[in-house]
Image: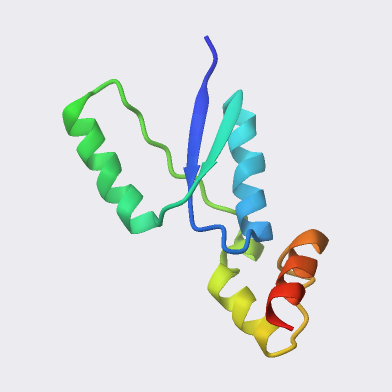
Length: 102
């Protein structure tokens, strides 16, 4: 039986923290579907889903400690101020952000 995970988030932009969680999820699941939402909403939804159907299991995975401080909001702020975001996201994301904000 194939196991599928749904990873909700804003991913605006995707960061190394997001990628870290995706890699961890792939150790447990055959497929990871990337979706858009926030943790608070997902936390509430997990509780409601459990009340509606006991067969729905929700797991929350955290990125490694060195990636937990990275947020999409901060990455966008840094690039807007012409800062260096190489430590936080991929080359393709950096290029897209520079095109957007420069």
